Each structure stands twice: as C-alpha cells, then as structure tokens.
Amino acid sequence: MAPKIVCVAGPTACGKTTLGILLAKKFNGEVVSADSMQIYRGMTIGTAAPGLAEMDGVPHHMIAVADPAEQWSAARYAERAIPIIDDILARGRLPILVGGTGLWLDAVVKGHGFAGGCAGGAVRRQLQRRLETEGIAPLLEELRRVDPAAAKRLHPADEKRILRALEVYLETGKTITAHNEETKRVPPRYDAVWIGLRFSDRADMRALIDRRVDRMVEEGLLDEVRALLQSGLPREATALQAIGYKEFLGVLEGAATEAEAVEEVKLRSRQYAKRQLTWLRRNPAIHWIIWEKERDFGRALQVSTEILAAAGVS
Image (tube, rainbow, N blue to C red):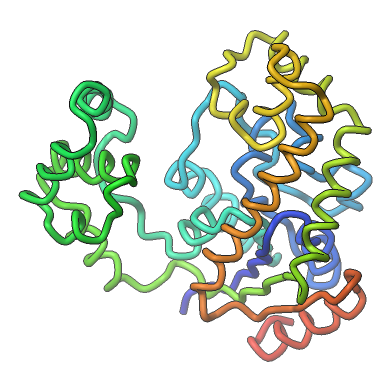
C-alpha cells in the first residue's frame, strides 16, 4: 500500500500555513512546503514564508532552498521533495505538504516523473527562436502532424505547452500524449489525504488578500526587492517575475509609484487565487473546509482531525 501523507491546499492567504502547523503538532508531523516561490532564498516577505516563530517548533522543509537566479519546475521540485518525504515517513512521522501550487502537489503525490526531454535545453532554445521568427502557427501545425491529440487538446495561444510537447517529441521520439497515457496506468506514489481551504464568499477572500499585501508592504517588500537586485540577481530572473516582486521592481525602476504597485499586486494576487481554486476544484479527493467571514482555525483543526481519522491517520 502507498504510504499516507497529508496535503493542505487552497488559494493564497487562506490559512494553509497555520493549519499545516496545527496538524503537524497534533499528528507528529513535519511540513513540506509546496509553494513555487517559497523555495527561493531572500524572498520571505513577498512569499509569506513562515518564520521561526510562526513555525512554532515544527520542522519545515523546501523553504529557502534555491538561489533566486535558478529556475525550478514541478519535476525538479518533486525530485527534491520526494526523498525528504520518504525520510519523514522512515522516521515514523507524518509528512504534511502545504501549498497552493497545485501542479507541484500533484507531481509529488503521483510520483510518476515527467515526460523526458531536457526542458529549457538546446532544443527548447531552438524552438523559442522559431517562435520569435515564425510565430506559433507553424509550430502548432508541426505538433499536429506528430501528436494530433496534444495539438487538439492545447489552446492555440498556449505557447509554453506547445513548445514543451514538441520538445519532448524531438528529444525522446515519444509524444507527450503517449507519456501521459502511460503514467495514468501507474498507481500514485502516496496515499494522500487532501484538505482544502477556501472562503464561502469570494469578497472575504479578496479582502484578506488585500490586507496581506498591505502587511507585506509594511514589513518591507520594497526593501526585499531592492536587496535581491543589489545581490546581482538579473531583473529577468524567474523569481523577480513573481507577484509582488515584478510590480515593486517597477517602482525601483521608476515605472510605477508605490501606490500603483500595491494596487497591481492586490489585483494580480486576487486573479492568482482564482486560478488556484480552478485548478484545485478539479481534484475530487479534496475535503473542503469553507471559511465564512473569518478563519476559524479551531474548527478547521477539529474537522481536519475527523477527516484524517476516517482516513486511518492517527
């Protein structure tokens, strides 16, 4: 049988970090962050990464493990996180994955690996140059010839996935569709108990996101962005494209005022939360805990405990 783990998921600012820590304390667990930006060092404020006080003695993993100049994928994250999860299990403790990056959570739970091909390598660079000179239409037509199922499935404007599908075929000789069909037949690596957090009224979620952004600004988000630049991080780095960092980079470059940046961060954060919910709602295994006006963590811990007990976690 696949070993049991817990996944605490939900949109930004919904309280995943707090619930994950409460569950870890109750169930002898350790937290593994599944946040695509908390992996970077020097980005504590803008990613809302928990500090030592908030961790409250609970071991946390996969936070501040990467240089901001690096580019991480779901595959790379899973490659690093899975040995950590297996080690937690081997020590008789409960791994609790906490995060809102749905693709990364899925990558770990399924554990199937990703389609071959050196993502971002020479073939991708060649395809990228073709995209810039020819546009996406000829590349989509090429994909249609070698992998019609993928071409039909992908939106014509989804350049990133079209290039990835071609990259996989050109480097491995196997279509990404064939890879996906093969992985469907492989059982998941872990037996995950999914707990999701969201608000009943999206207006309450939006208000909470706005308050969080205001708090980030008060804590020194602008200074954090300035420090990253002063460390030599290129402005084109993936880390600086994250919500909060990109907008305040514009402030430092004189392209926007701080007030304008704050409003843009709030808008983009709300849009991101909506996309997170869309992704997570595809997962029928999630047990949703619905917040009303305020987040009631005592009730959430009680409900989560009942869910885990029913799943055989004690």
